[in-house]
Length: 411
Image 1 (cartoon, helix red, strand yellow):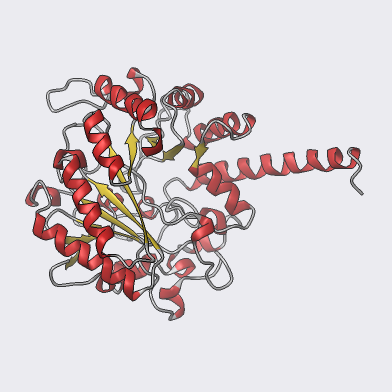
Image 2 (tube, rainbow, N blue to C red; image 1 turned 135 degrees about the vertical axis):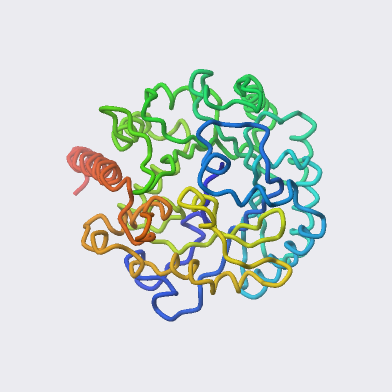
């Protein structure tokens, strides 16, 4: 599933004093508006991946919802998005067509809804639309329909080889890789302008460099490497002798040594940017305000799916698009807590020298039963290892560049 993220750093306004200062909910400012609208076009999936936190995890709210969003729900959502854009004078926003597997709703349904939203936005508000798919249902006809409406396509895979994707199976237990590989290659070869990139969850049991290089063979313009969802009460799997942070460090070294030319790796780019004092747009690192909201197939307004890995109902707000606007969601206590900047972090995080880079890590990874989310990330040691490693590479390369510039005649 495509990661939740806001606008790129160059498009995002700086908040008072930069990343180290608390956001609006902590300072008395107006809430930071939503800029990512995640629409659950279909609430079921054609795969039954054995590790899926959405369907195999603690949250069961999906069972009571309709499989697909109705035309009535989509119509109201389009109006609510436009209202939010007008109220907050947004000049750009992201529409993420999500699931389950959103293509179960049909490519034409995705295109119609995107056109509906675009048609209701103010003329000066640009819409960036993307669908996140497991690629098994991609065909030339469907990709043509998506491309005609300007919908880019993100693909979720566990790697670029069949053995990497052994846990991605359909409901009959058959491997999804043949169909997924066919869809990903079709996208890369015939619709490169629509290719948003590949999302992969880090599996420390796989060789990091082999995994990275196998994904490069699929020619993604960008990679998203995500840590598996886990928390203090339900820790992520950790194979003996392997750390997630070490896995990331090895891939970073491979990417950095190639001059970053092969593809964009967003986690790496954003870590480098934060170390250089630049704003970024990620949920995994930094202190940027939370700006994403989800609408489920029945019109319920929720927080992002990653929270469902914590406990049943963790993403609920009690709001819906028929009775509430998105500004109501901004005022919800759980959303306000996520926009609270440093005031919402654990004391251990506030004392950490890596605070403005780490930002406490992914919100869902901080959960501990009975203590909520005000804890360090369950990946705290991995994040420290990775961030310090990247900082070391930057320092090393900068030190090498100084003598080289002097030899070239610089004063």
